[in-house]
Length: 82
Image (tube, rainbow, N blue to C red; front, side, top):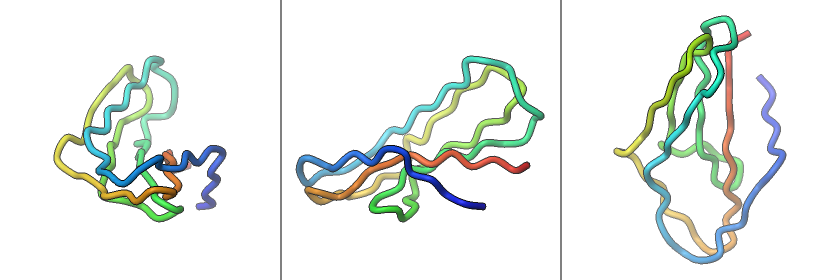
């Protein structure tokens, strides 16, 4: 599946990304999962959250983390099966 990064935020300093929280506020969709993944410079990190569509839902990844260097480009990818 193609990936599109509409917004990449440069990291202002060295550090660690952690505690990814995601919420679906509307119960729309066909029930297929949406996988949210934090990308660093276009490469997937271990920070991911999976939510099913078709329901108001939330979840978090408070286990994984990703080290960033100043200038790294941070983005969030949402992938869903057709």
